[in-house]
Image 1 (cartoon, rainbow, N blue to C red):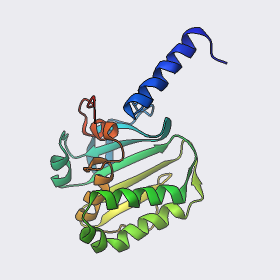
Image 2 (image 1 turned 135 degrees about the horizontal axis):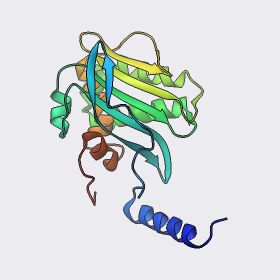
Image 3 (image 1 turned 90 degrees about the horizontal axis):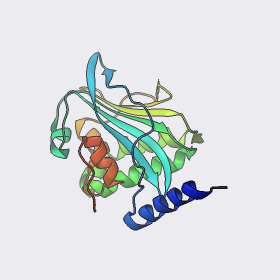
Image 4 (image 1 turned 120 degrees about the vertical axis):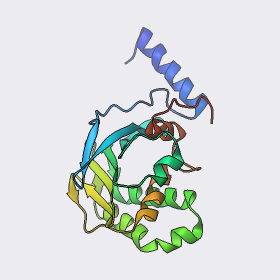
Length: 199
């Protein structure tokens, strides 16, 4: 049971969440390394943050790039390997996660583009739906490997062969960086910029 300052702090935080529609404590609690190795290339941590649903943290994530970028266009047009790294912060049903990713793809890319990459998108759903759930602390990742496609990982283990191409990985990135990004504060965090005060 909370008392005194603890209760007041919680009440203030709750009020801020309800007023802004975003958590007041949006910083990632996961320590992501400053670099990552993908295909023998050293990538830099561009930014990291947390995905919330209502007031509950779902996962922390980080974006790794060949060089730092603070705009969506710069990230999407950058050549070379890229990585999206995730750490689950609560139990997540695999099917829910896969469907949420597809919903984000469809919300941020034209219908003809989504249709063109339907097979790769289906593979994304299959990978996560094939796991009953991710538990708090589990890791998953999506790497873009030039000339090969997008490689999915769960707990550091590759899930089948890479799929798609650079265009497909750009669609994946838009789930978090597109015009209908799943969470604006997280979009800013991945770009390494100051969060906007209103959305």
